[in-house]
Length: 196
Image (cartoon, rainbow, N blue to C red):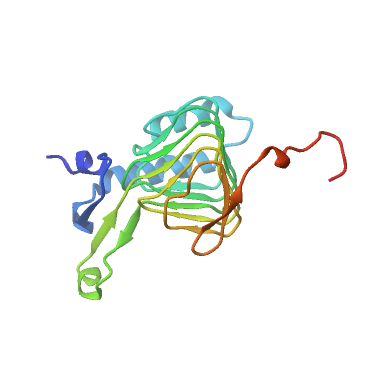
């Protein structure tokens, strides 16, 4: 089996760094480099690059520079999404991003990890698990989402959080490690044009 087929599976895996398809990583680095050097006015060029880079692209996906990813083919968007400045996605496994997702500046979404035991780390053995970000999630600035995590629909991740476990739908979760603070309710609705 081609190793990229293992990478596309919806289950975690362990591998050596030499198993990884370096030519595909080089392609992604080149496309990210090109994308990050486009002008905001070059909408068609930016769209063309993202369409080539990403596994599933939607024209309603907006990604600010500087954007980096490992491979790109494992990143899948379901609809409108906004990714702010300096986002990194280590997509050694599938990263599924739902509709209406907002990702703040400095967020790292990391499927990949390293072996815990130092002797295996020294041999270049690593791990990877898929990540799912469901519809209408907002991830706050400088947060990290670790491999194997699902963030439930409509939830908010507070700035600076480290998400290493699943987060249920419709909650505000914060911290390191990230924990549910409370449910989101109708009391959270704001009135437009009123002082808050």
